[in-house]
Amino acid sequence: MASILLEHVHLTFRVRQQYQITLKEYLLRGMFRNSRNPIREIHALRDVSLDLRPGDRLGVLGGNGAGKSTLLKLLAGIYEPSRGIRRVSGRISSLFELSLGFEMEASGRQNILYRGYLQGETPRSMRKKLDEIAAFSELGEFLDTPVRYYSAGMLVRLAFSIATAIEPEILLVDEVLSAGDLAFQEKARRRMREMMAKAQIIVVVSHDLDSLRRLCDRGLWLDQGQVRAEGPIDQVIAAYTSHVEARRAA
Image: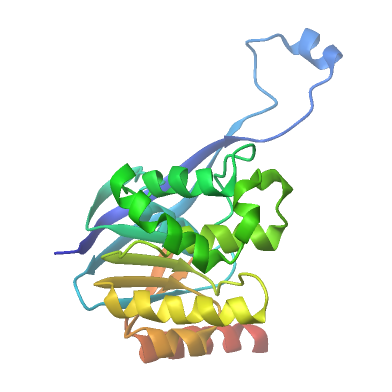
């Protein structure tokens, strides 16, 4: 049974501020003296708690830089919490940053296998799905061409076809997908609806509040990495929009 549990999760990134040091500064200050490139801590998520069970459809909303996409990556296992507990059980499909991670010198067909293995598939299961993925992508003979020759639209098309070929228990989606031309986009929307109907848990990040209302029954409002509200989707959207309108009026 799929489940997601976060308990008082914090995520902090430690980065160096980029500052060009001249040779003169280096010689005058010395290698081991006060650094002109200090380490800076970025608190991406602060004390986030969440408990999702089968049947939950969670919409995550908030302004730019609120931590929405970072939360999805933490749920997907890309990031580990700096503090707190993360427990995720179930097969995950992550639909974000689709075009990343391709082997550019390999063919489209080879990349289907590579990315399938990364999604937890086995060579045997991928052999069964290879023809279906190829047909859905509509890339034809380009599948035998290195992907470095693909256009951006072709790359997203292939990535979407691979990512949606599995049947996830947990589906993580970041924003509305735009994959290829209008005809393919309609295919992509149908595939998304099928996946959402089958997945036990769905977490969707979007600025489109109407889409979140249609897709989700629960909402989570993030602001500067902190949870401002969590509960029924209509209540959370109402709280968020009231906050935005008040800030505009001020």
